[in-house]
Image 1 (tube, rainbow, N blue to C red):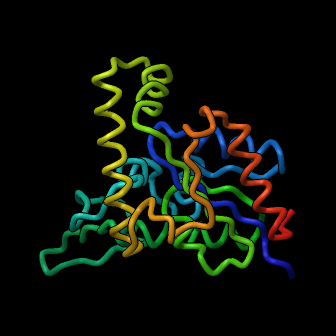
Image 2: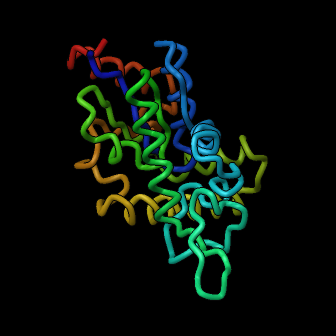
Length: 211
């Protein structure tokens, strides 16, 4: 059976990555997995979705706060009889397994979450990283989140740092480095035109005979 078409989209905060994903979804009728992936992971694992939401695209720094109620899945007891904590690496592994399972069943677009690395062996994977100038991104966040320029800049810088730490930790690569992706596109060079970014991605896919 032919493999499924998978598009992974890495993105800087405010660069328009989610908008690109949604446009591609409408174009090709493919499911977009962004926050939706967390619901899929929670359903498959039986773990409260809030656990994954708290650690979504945040780097591993040891162990999570103690997680209670998952003894049937991860219940390892110490000599004192208390539950062991589940570390962030285990959560990442669960998410990765679910991502691979989805990719094996259907075409999809996955936003962030190291999808380009996790699904790197998929023959029909198209990995894209979308960046933009800081000025452009701050402006988009100011408008979308109704923040002041100072707060929007802080939001962008902190968000980028968390995403980079998460990606670099789990992939042993550098977030946003062109060697990690098929395409790297600066959306601000295209006037922040989502349609123009989508057209570039479609052109690349046609050249690879994927569409």
